Image (cartoon, rainbow, N blue to C red; front, top):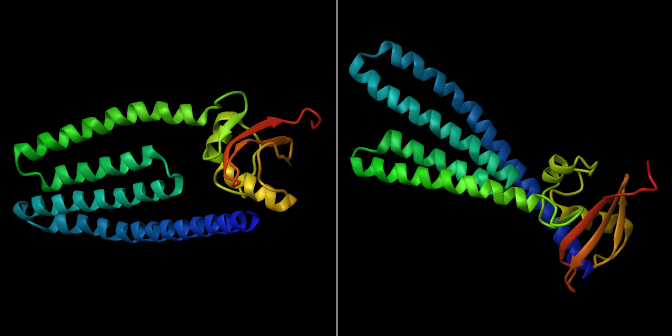
Length: 215
């Protein structure tokens, strides 16, 4: 079980590194793309009115492609449902702006955008419910460290995992303790306790509280 946990943590770190590499490459591509976006201004200025209309369409399409690249980076970085839906929203907007030629395309695109806005409204509330403690100090193991920081202000280390589960696994490795229900760890002025875990060592819920003995 310990070997399995070590392999899982190493695989999580490798996955995170690969995601950061991909996000960095996308960022570089977007920055390079900005150069070509600026060049469109010169082409539009020197073209005649008939050609400038088509060029401006290409300009808007290119700009939206770059925005999709930025949204894709956010999706990779945060893994949030909101980021995925916003990415889809910009893809639909680009499709409507550049490739919609009939009323049917416009109507379907409008319906799709309206559905995404409705989903976003309810999912944002749902995401907040997932982040907020299920009961005092208890979080799902899949909750992101950044979300807990924003919600509670706890001084949780951000260099030991993206999620609460990843943090506990790293703390267990440092303390040479097995990951099991009831095990506790100390991190600064915080006490971190596994309140729910499977027999295989899969963490489900973690309680994070201030240690009253540390000021």
